Length: 419
Image 1 (cartoon, one colour):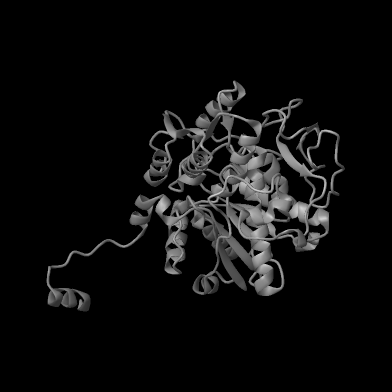
Image 2 (cartoon, one colour):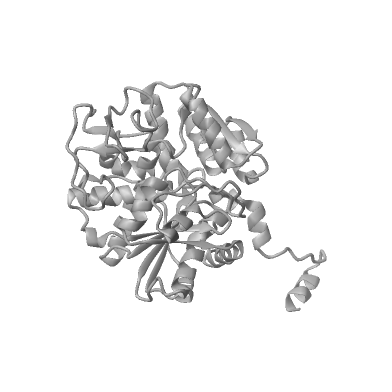
């Protein structure tokens, strides 16, 4: 099976371009990477992965940010703002409260447009230029549209985004609008938007840059490479577990791919691969349902609802890649309530780390798994937070403290503070 953690490095096929090709994870069919636009397998419609004849070692990396890892990517450089090199925060009070040996927070909200999606777009838009396509498109719960609009603008390309009407935070729509994307609000949920965008892409009307596109995930896998490098520099070891929010399951798939390639090259021992642990909101938890029931695939949830808008997704397209990633690393998945997400958002803010609700799901999930005894007290854990606080200012305002009106007088202010 091509997605096994200890699968050997692949042999380079004749269709490869400079040691890079596309391969179906379902039937193994192989395709040239840049001759034609394709998102899924021509033979069986399975998901595609980018393959490399020579997976990289740590010695192959130099520089800073996403393109530090160009030895693990299809090109030397991309359409860049730049992105990556996000902080791995220490959160000592939260670490003590949760009750683990080490807790660090990888804050992807510090990317140029405020989310991890920038990592995928720097690669994806570069591939679009290689293919010579004209119009870029995505379905989005907000962050993808903001990133695509910015990177499309940087690359001088037309951008089209489809959003579920009334379901996307204003901060994210504002970003896409200012970067001159054409915004279509669909009377449906995210999965309906993705259905339409996939149809447009199949008709040749646009180049799809949702995470169904295998090149998007190549950029996102650099999150995992950064986590391992920085954690090892600080502690001389690798984290036992990485906990991350799950929407379309792109990051889960991408991190697992990064770890597999490091194992293939001999740069990482299979025993040192962190347990991938996914967290979903209770109102949108098809991945958790599949893990808990031992299913090989997810079942689509047509009705999804959570205040964590970035993971309000009922049909995660990358589940066939992510489910093996969780299982092969001995990880798990857990669902948390909106109330638990808000509490975690406040706790992160108390450490000075401002994130949108979906990001805080990782910390909420860790806390729940620790309380249930699934996570041990001696574990070293990294929680991934995927989007900045200002992505959803309305949610931040609701979770925070109310302003206190005072008179226009210093003495009155002091009197109020004394109360």
